[in-house]
Image 1 (cartoon, rainbow, N blue to C red):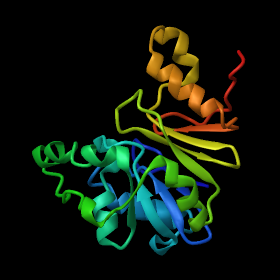
Image 2 (image 1 turned 30 degrees about the horizontal axis):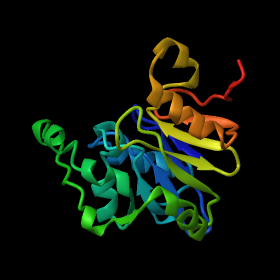
Image 3 (image 1 turned 60 degrees about the vertical axis):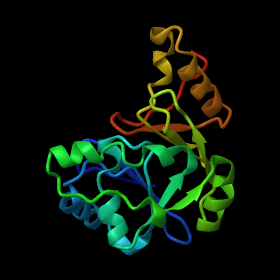
Image 4 (image 1 turned 90 degrees about the horizontal axis):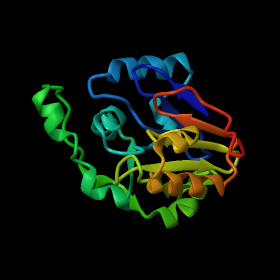
Length: 196
């Protein structure tokens, strides 16, 4: 796994035997910095088969349409379909120059299909819904123990959030995979301490 740091959102490249999966892309307008980060890590764009967003807020999906135009496939989870254009008005208002995503060109799967899809890419793991941050939020959990959670609030915050049953359900779902490392979009990676 490679962490690409070129903006305020961590971008993760999960290598696979049939091309890598890029998780989150940062804000629109950061394409030159993205290409520099690829080069600094010895990665070519051709090494990336698919891109996906943990959710469709502007700081997580801003480069998706650019990458699609460059030949990278979009992996869209069915629970995200209604949210693909959430950021369009924001980018238009800010004159970011990014085209809306063409979701008709995406590969759309359900979370239940994700293990088989990722296996075909040569990646062991699955994609699970974690909607406590936003209704379209998903997390990627790898069999090697890495877990990519986007903007999910940390497990340690559960007590502070008290009655946030949705957050508790998300973490119960993720704990079932016994993850060894949690990778956040805007925080350093952590080794979870679920029993403390």
